[in-house]
Structure formats: C-alpha cells, structure tokens
Image (spheres, rainbow, N blue to C red):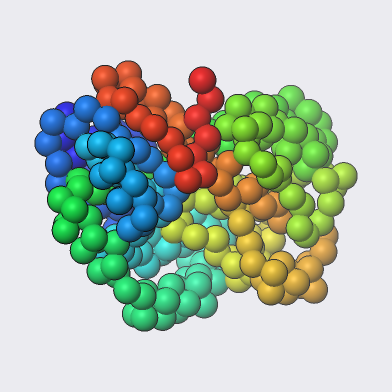
Length: 276
C-alpha cells in the first residue's frame, strides 16, 4: 500500500472526494508495511520512526507545508455547520471572522517548512490527516449522544456526558468532558457537536449557536478567555469541552483499525488511544 491509497481510506471513511486543505501527503511512500501515528508528529518523531525502522509517519495535526498554509479553508466549514443548525448566513460569517483572522496570522508567522524539510532529508514518507478523522469523531459523538438521549423527555447535559464516556477511546484518555459554561444538571435541549472545522470557533461561534436557540454546544477544547466571555454573555447556555486527545482518538482509532485490517502494522503514540 502507498501513501495515496492510505489517504483514500481516510477520505472514504469521512465521505470526502478530495484531500481537504488541512491534510496532505508531504513525502510520498510506496510499499508501506508499517506506520507510526500520533496527534503531533514532528522532527523528533520522524527521527524516532527512522531509527525504529518504520515506513511511514502519520500525523493528525498539520505539521507544516500546504496543510498548514491552507488550514483556514477548513475553518470556513464552520459557517456551513452553523447554518445547518439555524444560524443565519450573515451571522455565521461574522461569528467566524475573529477565528479566521487569528488562524491567518498564526500561519503567516509559522515555520511551515520545519518538519517537512526534516522528513525530506530523512527520506521518510510523511503525511497528516486532520479533517477526515475529525469528521469521523464528530459523527461518532453525534450518533452516541442521539442514541442515549432520544428517548428521554428532558435529557440533561449529564446524560450526554455519560454517553460520550461509553466510547472506549474516551475511557482510555486521561481527561473527561468538562462543562465550562452552564451545568451538567441543565436540560440538554437542542445541541450540536461543533467539531471538524479545523479548530474551535471560540466565543463568537458559540454565541451564534446560543442566539439561534441551541442550549448546548460541544467543543473539543476552548481557551480561557473565550470561556470567560461566554460566561458573561449567557450563563444559561451550556458549553462542553470534550477533551482534546481523547476526542481526537475517537476519530483516529477507527482509521488505525482499518489500516491494520488492510495488513499494515500500525503503532499509535503521541496522544492516540486505540482500544484493543
């Protein structure tokens, strides 16, 4: 199997036809028999993989190159997610602007060549798969919460938290979902899993969801200043941070299992938890 075929598996699992802007094959590889995968896989992990004799390094987060340069393309997908939840288009576009600006500025100053050049010098096949596996995560969380709460007349936030913790990847992680705004005793109400958009939408996107009538928003993670801004804005809404590494693993683990089924020996490290 080669790197292109491995990427195709991830796209198929996510229901995508093209490689999104935050993912890519940075150094191509053929005849891949073993691989090592992690959330963040940089120069140190490339050298480790080379020393241990791996054929391929797979990162989740964009390590540089085109997948970092074009990261903002994926952040814009949050506009569609908001509109699907009932947020008016002009409100959705305005809500994501601060996050888009921050992403652009961060990308502009980043050393996008650092890890990629190391992989090329080592002649180590190197790729990263971000959005496709985040989409798998979002789907699994959504299906799990829906199944656990659909029969309850007034499901609480706590019911959703308990449902997420039934996923084996969440159990393997060292963190659990946290209600940073609101309370686990609150009624769940209308809700959304606001993931698979590059990064969290910050306070602006959560506000847009609350203003559209949603009671609960699930982020993978959120910054302190955004959390405090949301608390001041609307304490009646619920903002849940599900936990970064464990949540990423909810999307990555099925992919790892698929690769193993295809005959590739895959080692997980750097925050990826794969149930046996």
